[in-house]
Length: 229
Image (cartoon, rainbow, N blue to C red):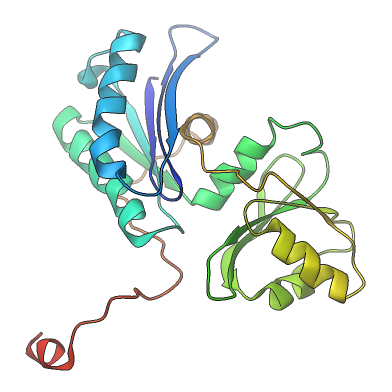
């Protein structure tokens, strides 16, 4: 089964194709760090990797996208692209949260895996996006939106590692409670390659994809406009 994976949820834009001609799949991918511009970058990436993989859009059987948490605009971009491409190609859909994808991506780094670890992303305003994973990056808890002190209360005694941009904040909060954990991979982002691997392993699909925000939007309608809605 050929899989197309898309991520625009945080500080990178990435796309990957997992092509399976036999027992061993081949992966083609693009990833670029960016704070904005995901909408303009994503579809050209998809076109490039489909060409590199030698696949037509109609040969994709499953389209995967991260569903959040992350930036409000970014989360919507990958989901909208996946929905549109699935409508055109007839492919099935798969979605999972961005922290689970980050956990899977972190396993490629020496020192991560084998024991439980946390993914902590700085969500601003003194909050963290948090997930807890076993040594194989399977979800134990989350994703949640919590203050670092509240996250520290959830950490099991055997956890000694946090990855992601909020790892240092979590390590500081844990230290205040007498718990020492190491912070690694502050630049870690969700990866379409990791997403494609999760989708392939799951054997699941969804009828549609819905965003996972965890927090209300910053922008709110003015009172008069809201009254007319």
